[in-house]
Picture 1: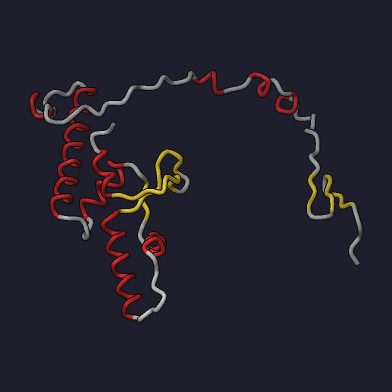
Picture 2 (picture 1 turned 30 degrees about the vertical axis):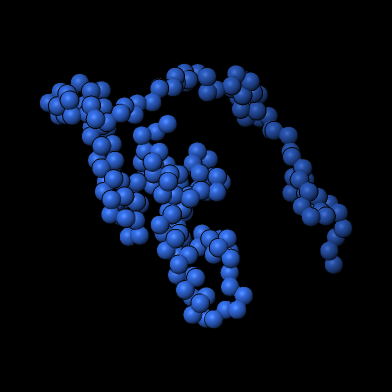
Amino acid sequence: MSENSWVWQYFFTDHAKHGNNQSAKRCWCAPCLNAKITILRNEDQAAEMNWGRSEADLHIAARAVVKTYAGKPLQHMLPHLRKCQFAQPNVRAQAEAAIAAAAVASAAKKAAQSGNKENAPPPNSLSQYPSTSLPSTPRRPLSACYSAPLIASPTLLDPTVTPPVKRANVGTQAWDAGVKSGPIPE
């Protein structure tokens, strides 16, 4: 579990993926949602709505208006919590400290990888922060990216050979190599 997993208690998620990002959940800041729900409830009371919205309806209406974030604590959630006007001051301070700790750990990791010892932090300064290193994934060799049948294809090697014409249906009319077939429009 990540050292920044405490951030999730301040965010609501519906467990759907965030837009095109298939690696993160869609989430909303809970303090922002609660503030919007309060505003909507007060608007309903000011308009003297007899039917009143349920808490679930208010929550859905608030989610439609409040900004969504990708559920990645360090990249999106902590920076928002640090600046969120509806979050408590101690939460904003905790987010600021977590971002600073990540920056120190990142600088130490870069200095260690480059062998640059003069910019590295003191040896005991990182002991209070847990390690966030990820296992490295092996890279595929460049030759694995190419398929042998594709390279040996006669249509690619011989410019006199034309590839077969594909046939596609468009509506009720069929098109083939630029020649229209089917009923002739009047």
